[in-house]
Length: 222
Ligand SMILES: C[S@@+](CC[C@H](N)C(=O)[O-])C[C@H]1O[C@@H](n2cnc3c(N)ncnc32)[C@H](O)[C@@H]1O
Image (cartoon, rainbow, N blue to C red; front, side, top):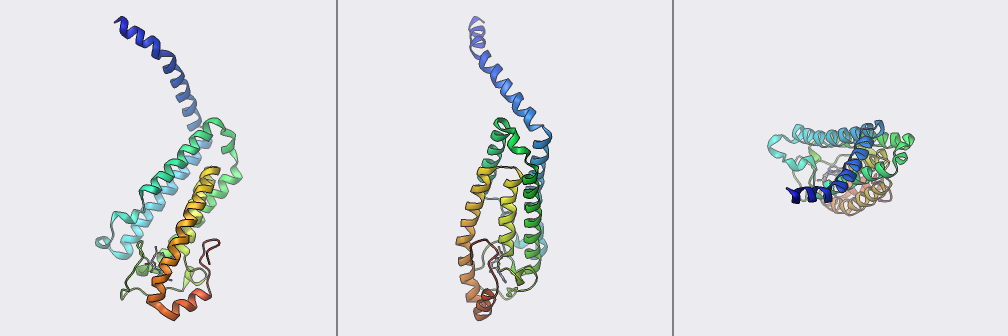
């Protein structure tokens, strides 16, 4: 019994400061700002992934679609977790950082605009749009050059770029905004030439001509 009392005496000061810290964090988390920004983030993520899956099923049929169409990878989860850690740390130490509503609402607008551009691309391309890059030509795969594809060659990547960076601007997360912009941009910088290599094989001069009169849609990628 005396051992337990002794142990309690040792632990008690740490426990009290842990509880104080926890209650400070929870009071920030349940502030209006955090509730609003985090629920916007939650809905943005849920809507993005569920609608990707639902559209893939609607276009290709349930049997041709796997859970990979939810587009949730380990690296993506890690990036989202890091962004939430940044959010909570800044919310605790510098809560005023999160109160820049002009910035946060600009991010929210980017999330909406990015989502619209991406979904328009998926709906316009129809069966030609697959989450995995096609390396062999299939009969139903036609070159799409109408709708959003009339102006930009990679509208779904353009939409995702705007959406993903927008989520971080919405959270007023400076580090993650920069990290998301760099990582997503580099991902598309490698993916676009790879994808276009096969599109040139499939559609030859039609694709060449299409590429000449359009831009990629991702900043600084031709
Ligand atoms: C994830 S989708 C992305 C489509 C496009 N890069 C975009 O951002 O909207 C990838 C698939 O779309 C196909 N694809 C890309 N551009 C296309 C186009 N203009 N017409 C038909 N198929 C296209 C590629 O062959 C690839 O299999």
